[in-house]
Image (cartoon, rainbow, N blue to C red; front, side, top):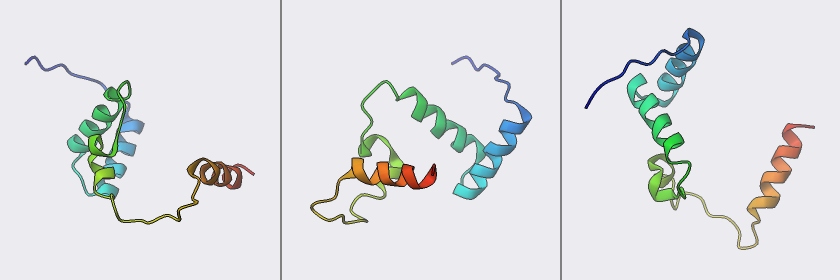
Length: 81
C-alpha cells in the first residue's frame, strides 16, 4: 500500500486534537473514524456500521408515541430562535 502525505491546516489540526482528547482517543483514531464516516456517506448507515452508535443500543427507551421528526424540529426551533 502506498502512503500519501496530506496537509491539514494548523487550526483544523488543533480542533482535531481537542476532539481526540475529549473522546479519549488518539489523533490517528479520531481522523480514521472521521474518514470512515465520510466515506460511508454514500451507503446506508445503520447502527451496526457506526461503532459509537452501536454502543448506545438499548440504553434509552422512548415512549411508543415518540416522533423523531417532531422532536428534531422542536430542538432546532429552540436552538435557532
